[in-house]
Length: 120
Length: 114
Image (cartoon, rainbow over all chains, first blue to last red; front, side, top):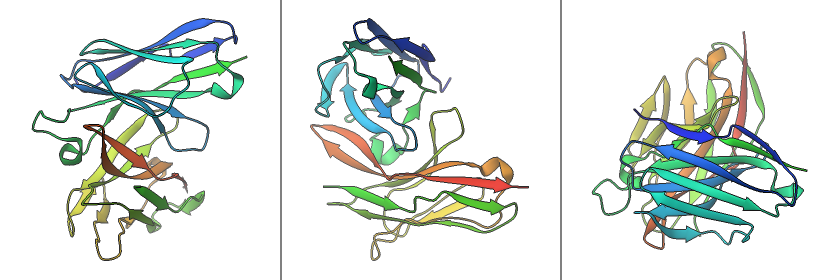
């Protein structure tokens, strides 16, 4: 099983709503990522979790709040978003540093299909 | 910091045409280099990789060689198919805060017509 599953696939929310994006993987990966992708642009890294601990926050506004409840799950909590936050949000996973299988060696981030978010 | 510069396109080719997508990089140390592909409506998937100088990555008829002297990792395919229509991203690995992340180029949209 090499799948990263993201829910929901589509989400429309108002600027005052609170919602969450969810991501799940069962490949035993200990690094998980959130990326944001605007149309016709490359993915931009938001957060990295390694062994369930936040290790990289790319200066993301606090209206985005990540959570890693266990090694298989990654959430992104959304609150008071702006219309410019509308984008495709991609979750990914990989072997973590220290497992003997570094990202640079394995070469592979496993991506989900993304959650397309529209903020009205 | 680390960065990747690639052809942005979009590019339209006829089936069986030759494809080259240029990619050059700037990095400290010895990064690994990757090509990822994003088919319409999907997430990204690894196409091929090279982890050291002069390595050649290959997959599905695509090839790229890690050239340290020219800091390049150009993607080539001798005969493209309609099913190769997608967005192609060049990327390199980097380290930060004890974790690793990929730095992506801007991506190039390829359309292959029958």
